[in-house]
Picture 1: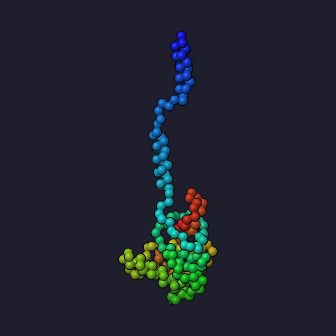
Picture 2: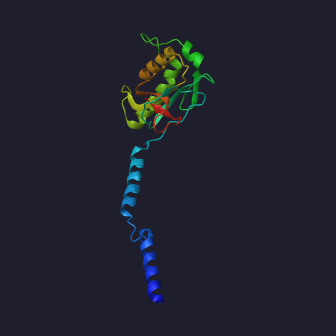
Picture 3: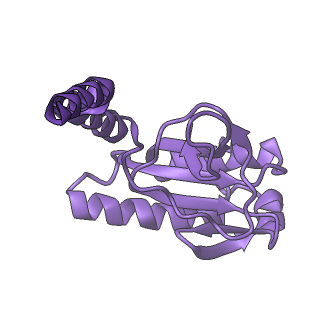
Length: 187
């Protein structure tokens, strides 16, 4: 009789804990979920190299923009108040604002900046075998301080066009959105 009672207890215990027993673990849905997460993470991340920040430049903000690539950086900083090209000091902001153009019918051109930009454009032309009178396709990224005067920006853009740069990117700080980091973005 004891064996029958023991068998009955075992049967009740088996039925009671049957719902907790794992029969099979299906990993396919789990692996599919992880593959999907990795796929979306890789396709939505920003690609390309970010432009280095010019010291002393406080960029304005924007909520829309695309990532920057390889470019020549022209910085117009307020602290210290200077114009830099590729990290090299060209002139002070005050000298750029006060400079008079030496080119007939183009009063906005800044001669000292035109000289520095022309040297960069000529070196790009030489490397890429582009004729001297053709514009270069390299991107000139202008990082202007958010307190910069618009008349100075207009003069810088006219000078860049005169030097042969046809692709000019004005950079701002990207705010909001998915990756709300303070990195320069082209507009």
